[in-house]
Length: 85
Length: 149
Image 1 (cartoon, each protein chain N blue to C red):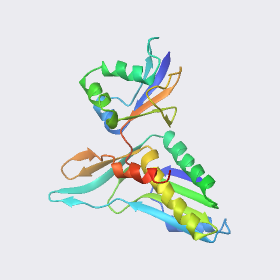
Image 2 (cartoon, rainbow over the protein chains, first blue to last red):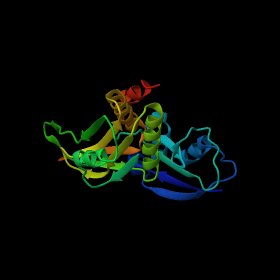
Image 3 (cartoon, rainbow over the protein chains, first blue to last red):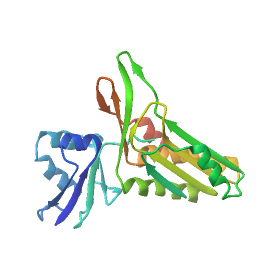
Image 4 (tube, one colour):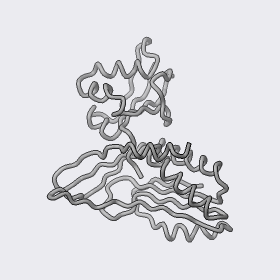
């Protein structure tokens, strides 16, 4: 199942990429499982995803919870807590 | 209702005057946020850089406008938010709310800025003459939003 991943602000700088397409193995069904998979990529990824206070997740432009079940072609974005206004 | 996400400067006074012609409103309340200067000894702010999530930003701002519209009797709402490199003193965000009466206009404008601060995906980076760093989210911003529940 292919999905698109986007990274913004401090999260983007830490992981070193702004977007990518990944083809998920069938055992990755939820956001929590996707995050566990991304953490295996290295220490920068672990540093972000180890602290739930340091990132937010949106799916198809809406904030989403870790239990969200991923669908093909979903646009999943990871970013820090918001600081606009 | 309208939402603008742009790099360019905006003039909230002339926007308000233009919109006023479209409505028979009794009141308008505007909020404008600026880039605040700071000077910590040798560390002086030069640029505030704003990043956002195109697509999600517009959707989040429209959703906030819809929530305000259904909560109060309003004639119109206008939101403009900038991104990119901003200088000290420049406007970052502008909100105009038109209503028949002042209370609705005041309350809705306050509601919109509180929700914008925690729901619209913008991130600020402060660039000083020595370094640059991402601004940390403030807990108080979530608390201000939760007051409206």
